[in-house]
Structures are given as structure tokens and as C-alpha cells.
Length: 462
Ligand code: TYD
Ligand code: MG
View 1 (cartoon, rainbow, N blue to C red):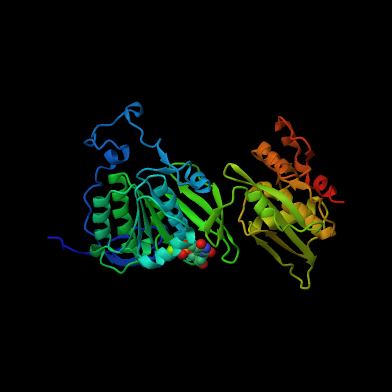
View 2: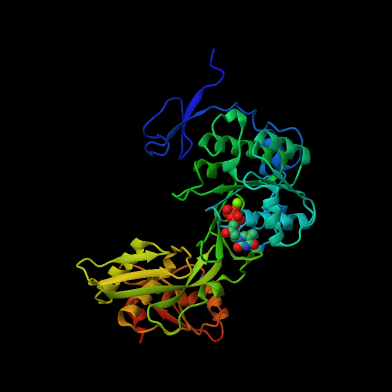
């Protein structure tokens, strides 16, 4: 007879399970990632997964169905009362979905979710906030900072998932917050809270609760130094939506980024500002990102990046100076280091700028991390402007991809970028010449300057 309770080994990175320890994981090829953990009791097969998410409650259909026969429950979305968050979610909360909110400790995850709970309760939903990290009086302290609360919002301090399941099934809230998954504990998983086995089993329990009872569950997850949600990457595979809350600790704005979304597009961002009374939405991030841009400084260029469907104007800064050592130093903050090196090589070869004996530093001001190719032209112009020590016109916005031959190539969503520039009062816009034809109605007051290669672009700096 098989032993009633065995231990298994699984990979910390990808969750690969094996009966014996292995040096290298066959799943993700990482070394030394196997940890031992007792197996949990096999849960009963997903309780009414199909029936629950379809919201019918009828017995589960065991035959294949045509698309036209399936009832859609995905239409009704709950608004979180925060436009920035709704957009990242793809238009609001989907019933029965599991949402992971990751981020560094202290970045504002609990604050964000408490505000979401307040908004949902105010609009008549029944909400339960479960904290394994703070006491009820600590939560009250935070709530007092945020303002008034009304509606059916209740709090529970608990870490045992067995108990939490019972409470959820009894109370039947529409949405639940679990703060945080690392503190949750299931007796039958054996190991300590926060370990891979516990996090995995706890998430599994929550997944079944969400799908089986049509409850939206937010899970808070702390991020480790390596930048993944503590412990297992596999958490990301299990949930429907993964949101990361990022930002510089000492700067007040926070960016909420969708990295996985079964119900909407990823790459959308929401911008918030941490204030004394909680998080405030920043509806116009461009204005925010450009505040503090120096006037008439060389090496500073305004560029445009698309974050999902929204154009965000930002400042690219470059500093080029003579190197004191044989080997020039290059750094890139907020954008791809290799891309910056490539653009420096293009400038050297195609525009004859002598940069091989210069240090070059490139920075996206404001701490936003962007990797869009449309920033290339901005980076090139910022480098050239700093090299010549001649400022780029402050009312000029620049975008375009740069190829290895020095050509300026087309980018997507030209019209949106141009309109954003006009909206913020820019008077000229440098863009790929091939994109000029795509603009149906050029905004009044904005001069469009098409360029075909980097030489033409840097000739504009004079
Ligand atoms: P918190 O939500 O506790 O972070 P997390 O749950 O991600 O660990 O946020 C804590 C930080 O936010 C803390 O440094 C104080 C700051 N804060 C404000 O600035 N204003 C506020 O109104 C609140 C509630 C927090
Ligand atoms: Mg917290």
C-alpha cells in the first residue's frame, strides 16, 4: 500500500514536481532549485469549475458545447471605482477571477486594495478583507487615513486557510482580499507559511474558492530581490491576472502594470500618486512625467512611448563627456543598455559623431522603465545634443525607430502620439518621414517634421 503521506520535491522556480531530488530542473533548466515538501491531500476535482464560472449553478455539462451554446458571464464587470485600475484590468473586475497584486514591501499594495474595497463596498458590493499581516487596529489606523468607509465591508485577521474557506463560504462576499499569500497557512501542506509548498497549496485552495463560488479574489504577493513574487513563479501561472505595483520608494508616484491578463490586454499601466490620504489617480501621466524638465538644457529630449493604448510623454536625458580612462563608460537607466550601445554605434558610423572616446549616460527621467523602439530617435537626439552641448528646442517632441543603417523607421499609433504632443502644448514634432502620410488631420499649431535618417534628425539641433 502506498504511504498515506509522502514528501515530494518541487522546483522553486517553475513548480515542476518530482519524486526524487534533482540538481537541475527538467522543466526550467535552473540549477539547485528543488525543495522538499509534503504532498497535500489531493483536492476533490475542481468544484463545479465550469458551472461556477458560467454562473448558472446548474449541473456541469459533460458534453462538448458549441460556442453559441455557452452562456457568457464575462460581460458583467465590476468597476473598482478607480479608472486607472479598471483600465489595467481590461475594463473592470471579472466575477470569479483570481488577481495577483505583486510588489516590493511598503510600495502600497495594502493601501491600494483597501481603497478598492472601500469603493466596491460604497457601490453596494459585499466585500471581505482578510489580513494575515496586520491586526484589526492597525487596519483601522490605515483606514482612518483614507477617509470615510460605508457599506458592507468587513475585516478578518486570520492565516489559516481552512478557517478562511469556511468564512468565505458562509459569508458569500462578492470580492475578497488576501493580504498576503506568504502569510497564509494550510495545515495539511505541512511546511511553514511562505514556503513554496504552502504558497502553492494556498493558491490552489483560493483558485477553487474563486471559480467554484464566483468570487473575485485579490491575492497580495511580496516580491523577492530577484524580482519575482516570493517563492514560486508558478503562482503567476495559476492566477488569471498578474499586476505589479512598482515605483521608486522615495518618489511619490506608483505604477501599476499588468503583466498577465486573461480578460484584457497586458502592457496597460495605471499611474498613482501616494499622498498623505492614500493613493490618488494620475489621469494625465505625461504632464506628471514632464514636470521638472529643465528648460534649455542640452541632452534633454521629450519622447513618446505607448503604454498599452495610451501615449505617455517622457523626458530622455543624456550626458556625454570625455572619458578619463581608455575604456569609455556607458550606462542606461530605465531603458535597454544594449539598445543604447547600438544607437551610439549608429551615431558614430552613420552620422560621424566621435563617441568612442566619450562616456555616455542615458536616463529616462521619472523612473519609468520603457523599452519601446520608438524611443530610439529621442535617445539619438539627446546623445547628439549633449555631445555638441546645444539644447534641443523645448517645444519639440520626438519619436521614431532607428535602424542599423541610420534610417528612421515607422512606428505604430502615430496619430495618438501626435495628438498627445499637441494636447500638451508642443509646437513641433519630429517623426519618421514614412509616417507623415498616416496622419489624417494634423493637429493645429503642431509643425510635423519628417526625417528619413539620423543625420537629418541631428541637423535639427542647431
Ligand atoms: P502599504 O500599503 O502598507 O504597503 P504594502 O502593503 O505594499 O507593504 O504602504 C505603506 C507605505 O505607504 C508606507 O510607507 C506609508 C505610505 N502611506 C502613505 O504615504 N499615505 C497613506 O495614506 C498610507 C495609508 C500609506
Ligand atoms: Mg501590506
